[in-house]
Image (cartoon, rainbow, N blue to C red; front, side, top):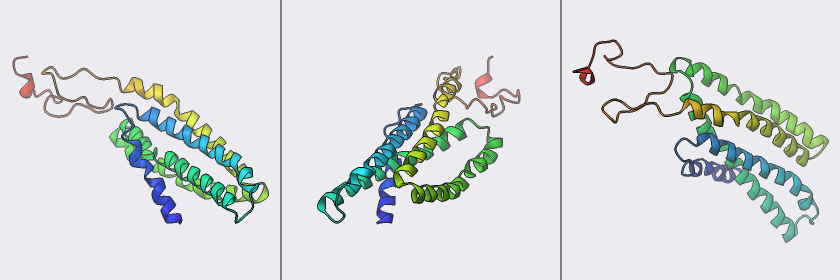
Amino acid sequence: RAQAMRGLQSAGIPAAFPLKPRGASRQVMCGFKTAGIALLVCMALLDSWVKRSAVGSSEHTFRVAVVAALYVVRTGLMNCTYPLEESLLMDHVPKSARARWKSLDSISVFGWCGSAALGGYLADRYSYSTTFLVTAAIQLAGTALQIPLIFITRKAESPAPRAAEGGGTTAPLHAAPAGPEAAGGGGAGSAGQ
């Protein structure tokens, strides 16, 4: 069962990309995370709804299935943003510093260890609802910190002027010009200038 749920959660990753218009990864990322947080709050609020039904009854089975479906959709929404976050990070970090930033980004994996222990404590001491609400609050704080990226990175991604011949590509803001033109050696495009 766990493997089937994990497979369904992973289905959210490719589902996010057709929804992403060019240059809108920040909005998609924050929107999906906000929706995932809202579903987590719904799961917390539905806990008492599930507990009001008799265990083993068809009503209880239905209610558990509703919460499980919310869980799969919510986890898919939250996890499908990782490729977008990675892309955003790598697009705005110089190549020389990418390994450092990637290693700092991977440190967040250690947070899972501490959060599992805290979640277990909260579930034993209070309830799963409390654990879900605390998780939602922490995720909301993290998403709120990402919202300014919508405006900050939009300015950094404004289109650069195209090459004089019309066409060509625009280089990232942090990249130095490449090729013989950069060294002052001219090149095919500099003849007659």
